Length: 205
Ligand code: GAR
Image 1 (cartoon, rainbow, N blue to C red):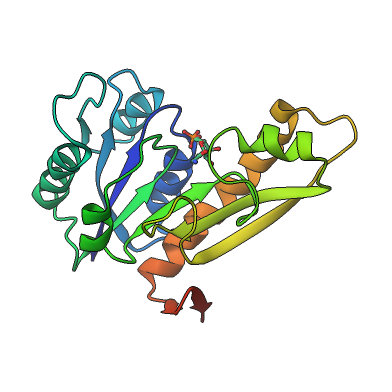
Image 2 (cartoon, rainbow, N blue to C red):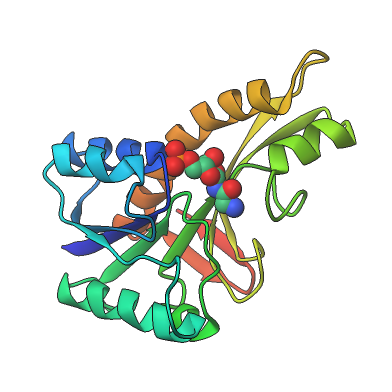
């Protein structure tokens, strides 16, 4: 079976939905390890409660380059069987840019969830960006990670209508509900080998 690692920095709600889908036997994948770059990430407690291995690799005050940091992540992935041949890495609110070397090593095996309809609104605070821009729809995107920021092949998207009274907080809440549906589904499709990549597109069977 494939081995899954989830990288988090905070609340961990997307991680929780993925882990619960796995527990319910909806996704045939082994949840091997949760890695956090922050020692106080709330998601760590959730993962521990669910009986999943957790590892903290603190990024704050880390002495070394981004690559040095990522080498620590890669070593932890390997220790838990999450290899470039037999692994999937999900970034779930992992607020750290990863190195090109890490991305190349795990080519098309790293996914991310982004709270906007890519390619619109990349980067940070994207729910606020969407409200301020005045778009009528935003949503969320699960995509493979490539060497750009939020640019990799799109796997699933879900659209959310923006209401006149929406603030970035109310919009973020409604988008998050959709995130919790599409991220476990993207992991399921990957685990069932239903995703093929052709150029910058994914083809789902
Ligand atoms: C989610 O909304 C996710 O889309 C976003 O962080 C939140 C993490 O929540 N990620 C990004 O903005 C990445 N650029 P969670 O910790 O409860 O899953």
